[in-house]
Amino acid sequence: MSNFNASFSLDTKTDSKRRVPPDYKHVDELRRNLTPNGRMQSRKRTGYTAEGQKKFAMAIKRARFMVLLPYSDAVS
Image (tube, rainbow, N blue to C red; front, side, top):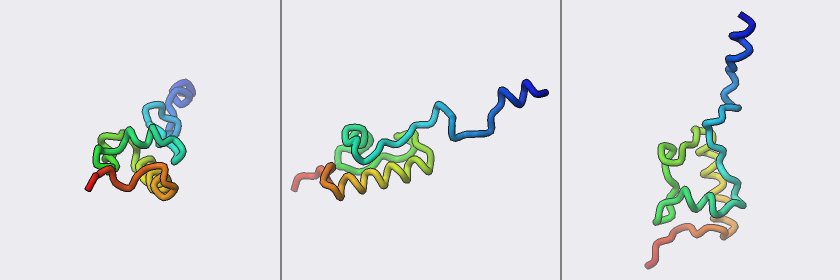
């Protein structure tokens, strides 16, 4: 039984399939997850978990505040 416990891990934070959201300094990676209008894409499209999507949203907001990303790509 000890072999089964050694191979099975309940720690989901080390799952290799989960994507880590980029930091606000990685503008190219953030821009990849924006729509052409400058809106954030959904969790379904980005592949982030709920926690990762919140971190992604905060990174977008920080980058916009620091003028690394525009608030909107729409041209009036």
